[in-house]
Image (cartoon, rainbow over all chains, first blue to last red; front, side, top):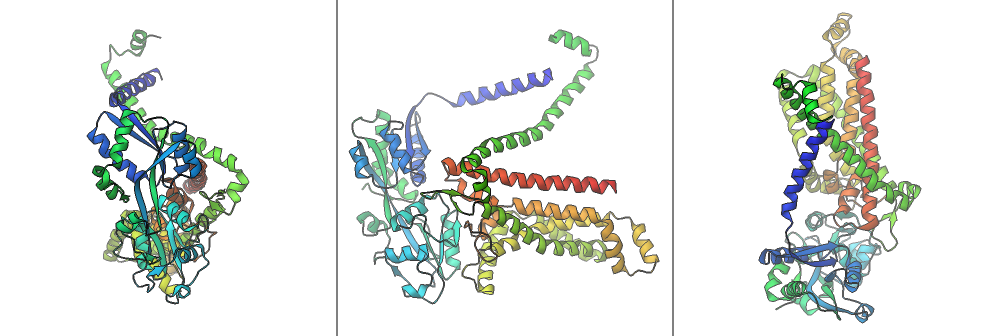
Length: 269
Length: 301
């Protein structure tokens, strides 16, 4: 038994030596908040850390509300919120900076004759008050609502904008945008939602209140199913030099292609 | 005891080969402990991370609650729909898959001409090797639309689709294990039966199959184990809505409940997912226990 212990000890110590080498001194920029912004913030962080090897950008996926509170209490440098800050949050001492916009397309099967819906109709189709496409000018076919899993940022965004939180009657809850698009492309009665940046060739993206979802209409605010990705920072206390540098990078035109590649609409020109 | 005494006592100085022998034993012991250690770590981890949420939610409410809304403003964490779906889905797969697998095994073991048998065994081998995501993909693109058109339901992603996929997935293990059991029956049994005037079909079903009974039960339990633990394939065909199970409704299994929400989960939701995993783990432990009883029972005969 002693022998075993000795060998195990050696193994553990050598592992510790290997891992200890990995950590070196670096400045940390901490971000905390919205899970919807995960892809955007991680892409930005990855590129930024590649350019500035001595800076470590961390991301804690907790949710917009938690991220805002964390920023307010100084537990992180930058709070991430996928909704605009409320007036009382701004009043409590936070500044919001919109980094990007997130447009969500409403998609139907390519054979569906319906091409335009109002937000109210979309909400009805998803919450089960409209069960047949003929009620919104389509074929006599049952409505099949296809959405994302609970906790998904796209679902959260879609439901909060259309006012259908916790009220959607889904036929399928799928775990990726690609799966939603595939399911919608195969069912003539299907309706689903997907991020603007995804490949929507096999389905039909609807115009909402007559406005087509494009980068321009999202930016101008004409397309309504959209939400801002916000950096929340303390108004009174300036950011640390490293955090400010990352912040400036994220809102710069230089970061715009990275934000676009991560599926959001950058606001920097 | 210090090292010197230890070496002296073991007599390593006089006998270096014994030292070698002991070192090798130790290496093998450590390697063996990797498997044991993994099981222990997983079990302990699951229990530690799964139990708190059960008590926070309340065991009765958790196990028998019929509503799952993990991210709602007023969250509900009832997993009865998942438990029932897993049971119904597995039962359905067994009802469809076992007869097919069993008769295929009888055919292969006793009736098939050599060429056909070799070809079919090859096919079954391939079927066993297909990754579950491929089953899911084919199910999603062919089975789900097929069910929608064939049965006239609004959406084909249903419990029924999952049952079909699972039934096909358990076929290889059911066939292979039953086949081995049937082939292990001593030929004298069959010869005696034939000599008494029974036809060959009578012999297979009255003599060979009863003699291979415990092996065939093992095959069924293995099938249950495979079906209840499958996640990827059924996540793609079952629709994943936390409904109470019904044949043509979108459903969520215990496995898919964990898999589908894990990536963005937080707080109590995440803890509850571990609790679901713990429940699933208990189910699989029970199945393994049954399997062990069957196996030892088979040996005694």
